[in-house]
Structures are given as C-alpha cells and as structure tokens.
Image (cartoon, rainbow, N blue to C red; front, side):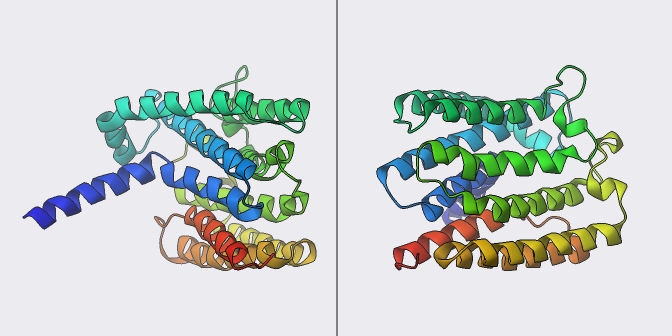
Length: 276
C-alpha cells in the first residue's frame, strides 16, 4: 500500500515536471553547460536560459488555457495546477530580470537587442500585433520556434561568453526539425488556419523534407563542428532520426524534445572526459 502511494506521488511529480516545461527548461540550460566551457559565467547564463524557457512556454500555456485552445488532458491539468503554474511563471519572470541586470555583460547593447528580439518572438507567437500573431501566419510557426531557440542558445550567450557561432546552422536546422515534428504531432488538433507545413503539404512531402533537413544537418555539422560538439550533435541527429521514424510512421505521442536533453548530457560527459 505504501509502495503504491509513493509510486503515485512519483507519477504526479513526473507529470508536473513535464507539463510545467521544467524538463524542457533544464535541457536548454544543460545545452549551454555542455557547449561552453564550464565557468561561473556559463552557469549563470544557463540559469538565465532555464528561466527564459520556463517563463515563455508557461506564458504560452496560460494564454492558450484562457482562450480554451488546450487539449482536454492539458486543460484538466491546468485547472488542477493553475495557481502553482502562475507562481512558477512569476518567479521565472522575476529571475530573468534580476539575472539580466545583475550579471556582468561583455556587450550590453547587443545583449539588450538580442533580448528584445527574443521577447518579440515569445510574445508575438501568441499575442496579435495588431491582428495576427506569428503562430497564425502560414508556414511561420516552425520557423519562429527554430529561430527563437537558436538565438537563445547560440546568439544571446555571445554577449556573456566566447562566441560559438559555428553552432548556429547545425542547431537551427535541428530546432526546425523538432518544430516540424511538433506540428506533425499536433496537426489533427491545430486549427486549419495555422497552415503549418504538415497541414498544407502531403504526408510524403513532409517525410522527404524532414529527411533532407536531417541530411543537411549531418553535412553542415561535419563541415563546421569538431570534438565534443560534433559528437554530441551527431548523437542528437541519430536519436532525432529514430524519433522521426516513430512519429511519422508508427506513433504520434512520443516527445522529440527529449533529443535536447540527450545532446546536452552527451556534450557534458564528453567535455568532462576532456574531448574538446
């Protein structure tokens, strides 16, 4: 009986960790630690990015909840956890402001510009400016997600840390594939006027397009990257290929976002082994 109770508590905690985007935020933070030298500054920017992802995705969920756009399962979860989700959003937003203004910047003007762009993409994704949000513009949804993640992981940290611009294209393509897979998973639930790539084009075209993106990511990664970054991205592309197979051919409910945590952990392990 006691073991069953502990298992139920564990399942509830696990569900909250996933539904509240804490797992996705942790993945983003660990990517920074894995790709950049493990210094005090890299840990600070990792914490900052953790709260950026948490705040943004929680805001999107709150907006969708208020507009009754969530799936029944997510809607029920939000009803049960809305006060805690609001606290998490407010805490994350406060931490973003504190870290941004209290941390030492190498280039405050560029950091402010990148942060403003991230805010525009995050808010414009769900809030109309003035009549349409970025999410509702045909074909723009997945590109917006990919661009925002790439700026967050590659471009924005250059204001704090040594630049890693060689990661820009490999990660942008990877994030684009993840976004398209998310659109494919949600194509039966998204409104038709979103006109995401899987909604507009055929099943075969989507498969071929994702295959071309995967191949392009392999070629670009081998051309631009080396050491632990190359190995980590290669592992990620391999795992992502498996997710593509299951989502496009077998299952709809696997979560491709897990690819990020796999890349991050492999990068950290390889770096700790001295593979640069």
